[in-house]
Length: 432
Image (cartoon, rainbow, N blue to C red; front, side, top):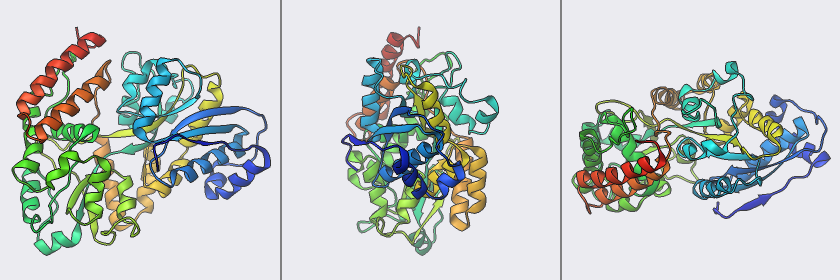
């Protein structure tokens, strides 16, 4: 779907009830009946494909039918959504009551999101994956800034047919990733595809950094990503492309869409991708490998750590309809709503009890994939939540790109980024 802003206004009364009835089991499971009232809230919500408009229509119609509250909303894709929210937050805008958000960027919004501690009780919050709650909580004051809607961690997807023909198993270590990749690279076929540009490249570097035993900052917020572990991680990342040549040479220009396409078009034998990819990879209309892919855990090195991040919803601190907004947030993270979201997009539930339910109902490869993802999520890591880190991640993106394209050595690229990031953290007050 285009990243252009798309306006969708829904009518109340009988039309909303009819739309809610059309939502089927989701509405039934969440309860029915208009509670009256003419409250309206505005939301800026995430989209990411052609099915999202219908999904949000179903959710808001069901919510209207249950509560009588109308949700008028706009849809934006992830990057323009975040940029718009930064602008609105800086202006203390009251335009929206509810924002879609993400753990990777939430540090920039801590001053602008309404604390949710008083809207969700401790027993309810205990059902969400701890890593999601931890990274959506402001470490400065312990206030929960957003509620997680789904978990995001990556899985190793691979071509079962090609691996079986070559007599190899999916890689469990960095060394095996190279060896297996080399065996499956020939004649225009590549063993692996990776993103190599922008925020996706920074996220891939983060996984390698953690797997090498490194981290972004120490306990005093001093930069450590240019440590020997960081240099090892970026060197390995570069060498997959430039030395071992098990990826297409132009992956230095790839972001998430190109990364996924390298697998679905049959060019590459393996990819690290998100939960939503499970649905698209298995869809014959979208994928040439729908009947021939399988999944495995991410390869490990010194550790097996990988990112565990989450999409969520937050209340604008400057909203005039906070109670109604809180009702909407609660509605979107009920167990039934999370099951419906999984059925629609294969989005991993943010509640542990719901994840157990989904895993228990799945079969075969899907059940194993879900179980592997749960292990990754439970042991996952995230980016530091300190002032200025949103700027730090942007600087590191450039450093990673410079190393992957052989414009700078990994050590030089990371050292230059570390010097700039130290200044950023000092100016933001995170480092003294």
